[in-house]
Structure formats: C-alpha cells, structure tokens
Image (cartoon, rainbow over all chains, first blue to last red; front, side, top):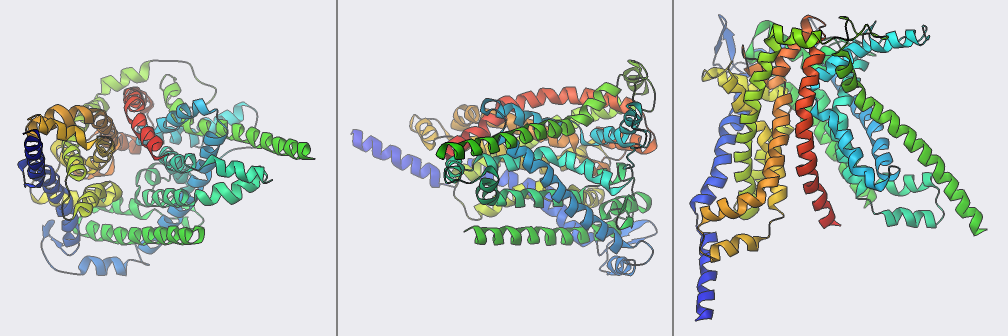
Length: 311
Length: 277
C-alpha cells in the first residue's frame, strides 16, 4: 500500500509538471505579453517609423526613403552626420580604453593588496557612486572642472597659478564623466573575473621564480582577458549611447582631436528637441543601432580570438 | 642561495604592495570626489563654487523647497520608480520562475527577449517608446514613464530573482505538492518566502535603475518630468547650487538602498561564487 501511495504521488507530481497548468501559462505568458506590447512593438515601430513622413506637422504613415536619403545627403554637408559619428566612435572607444585602464589596476589592488577581510568593504565603497544620481554627479563635475571652478581655484589657492586645467566643454570632460559613471559597473565585472583566478596558479609561478611582474603578465593578465573584453565592450556601448555627459560636460559640441563636433547621440537629441520630427529621429536612431551592432560584433570577435589564443 | 632569491621576491612584492596601496587611495579619491563635492558645496555660500570656501549656509536647501519645481520632480520620481520596480519584480519573478522550473520550447529565446531591454541603449528605446505611445495617446504623462521603465528594469529584477531561485532545491516544491498543497499554495507559501531576498534585492536594483534613468523619461514624460529630466533642464539653464542640495538629498535616500543591497544582494552574488569554487 505504501508502494502504491508512493507510486501515486510520483504520478501526481509528474502529471502536475507535465500538464499545461494555469501557473505555467501565467509565468510564461505574462512576461511575454508585456515584452511584446512594450518592447517588441516599440522597437518594431521604430523601424517602421523611419519610413514615415511628416506633412503639415503631422506624422503620416508612408513607405518613403526620404528620411534616409536626406540623412545620407547630410552626411558631409550641413549637419555633417559623418563627423558626429566619427566623434562618437572616437570618444566611445577611447573612453572604453581609459575606463579599463583606470578600473583594472584598481581591481587588482582590491584583490591582491587590500586586506582579505576588507575586500567586501572596498567593493561596496567602489559601487557606492552608482547609487548617486548620474546627472547630479555630472553637475558636480561641472563645478569641479569649470574655468573658475573648484579645481582651478584650489590650484591658485595653493599657489600653483600657472597650473590651470581647461577641460570643461571638451570631449576629455565627457570622458571623465563617463568613466566615473562606468567605474562601479566595470569594477564589479572585473572583480568577478580577477577574484576567480586560482591563487595557487600565481603561487606556482612565483615558486618557479617568476617576479611579481612576470606572474602578472603570464598568469593574471591572460586569465582576465575575457573579463577585460566584456568590460571594454560594455563601456564602449554605454558611451556610444550616452547623451548626458556629452551634453553637460562636453557642452554639446566638445572639442577633441577631431575638432568641435557633437556626439552623434547628442545630435539625435538636439535634432528632436528643435524639430520634434519623430520619423527622422527614428531613422537616425536606426543608424545608431546598426553602428552599435558593429561595435558589439567587433568585441565578440576579439573575445573569440582571445579564447582561441588562450585555449 | 635560495634565501636570497626569496628575499628578492619578497622585496619585489613589497614595492608592488606600496604601489597598489597608493593607487587604491588615488582611485577611491576619484570615485568619491564628485559626491564629496556635492555634499560640501550644498552647504557653501556663493553661487559659483570655488576654493577657499565662502562660508557655510543652509540657504540652498531653503531655496530648493521654496522654488519647488525640483521637489515636485523628486516627488514624481518617488511615485514612478517604486511602482515601476514593483511591476518589474512581478514580471521578473514570473519569468524567473518559468525559466527555473519549466522546460519549454524557445526557453533560451524567452530569457534573451526579457534581458535584452537593459542591453539596448535607452536613447534608441526612448525614440521607439515615444513613437508608439504617441500613436495610442499615452505619451507625456507619468504613466508613460511607468510603463516604459517597467520593461527595462524587469531585466535586472529577473536576473537577481533567478539567482535566488537557482539556489532553491527542487525537492522543496515537490515536498509541498506531496503534502497536498496546490500549485498556487506552493507558490505562495513555499517559493515566495524562499525567493524573498532575491525579490527585495531585485526591487532595489530595479528602483535604482528607474530612479536614475534619463533619456527615456526625457522623451516620454512631457510636462511631468522625473527628477533627472528636471535636473537636466535646470542645468542647461543655469548654475544653481540648489542642485547640490537635491543631489545630497538623493544620495541620502540612495544610501539606504545601498545598505539594503549590501545586506541582500552581495550575499547572493558571493554565495554563488562559493558554490562555484
């Protein structure tokens, strides 16, 4: 009888699991419905909208290439989208490079130099800025970097009159804002990678006579490669899509070695603000999507090559 | 011979250690600098922040509340973000439960579809959201921000809740069924309590994302701006130290959620790492 009861219980659970029960329907259906209505639909609509037109300040459904042709015509004339795209790529890639350059050594120091029982505290402190508002942090950077701002006035106050930084409204300031925004996330990503490196491997390298530098180059660096590529791609994508730092610290058209050119993302935002021409904005956004996919593909290819080399 | 090699290695290690400490100090100074600036200069007289200071005041906090527009925006944010985080947690919980328990076709695609919104740049989503919402007459209200934020932040909520559900032994649910509980009773009395730390951690993360989100809200919020949108409009117009005051208030609110995360989220992440070891 016990056996029969057990058998029945098993059959019950199996039946419960296999049946298309209301719970299964709800737990798959609800997220799917919401995502279809408020994610898939807007994205699909974005593609569609790029082919629509504006007539008498009204958005009219159409199937015209007008927006794209006009943007193509403006690539090197008037709005010079090509320059803005180049500026965006340049700023995004250099930001990603410097962000990793700042964060990776910091993570190494947290993992290998900070006392083991304090690591968690260090990590929490590193993540803390993420919990303060991004746009308000940019305001802080603004008053820090301003021409007569905190840093410059402090330099004069301590007697270094000759040493003045002129960063505000340049793309360097844009990068500083972005790196500060990205740092907490990159630190977590890189920390997970570096903390998972088996310490006995490093010990083995040291026992075999490697200096600390050699152990780093031959063991730690190759083993953090994937984490570094992930962090850098993430930083590049976020920087490429960000509008705030470029607008508030870069001043809209911040200077870089490419000249005083706005970022593509800022151009999309200001164009929409001044024209409220949504179909054209959608077409510009689609171009941004395509460029981003290209960056991601490049990142993935790099990671793949790293894997092959390491494996 | 061996002794001197060990000494050489130890000395080599000491210099790295000193360099590492030095860099830790520099790095953390960089991280803290804008936040410290915000707090210190919210109490400083003088419209244009400079060093040495121009004396202390509570005036900017007073001006903030007198002027009211930023406080109103803060209220808007404090209405929208908790609601959006709660909605995201409902969606995220169901999605995580489905992925964790059921085997169904396109399960991988289901996960990707739900995580994708957080990976797509919000600038692009903002344009798409506005296009669709304007078509159905839902643009320019707080409700628009709520509906759109929910999609984005359901992804982090789902990820965190799934971390927790992944730690649940399947036998737990089976035991409840065997003891006669229905599916929904089990969900309510066994799964939900177990998942609670994950849900709370996911909620805080979702809240933070929504509270700080700018560009989507800029596109869809219209005349009911959330805090970041109002701050942006303010900043483009002028330099006003009231912004430091509102920043300090926001940071104080956020510190509470940071403490919550420290208590809820980190143990989750770290315990999984331990299991992996």
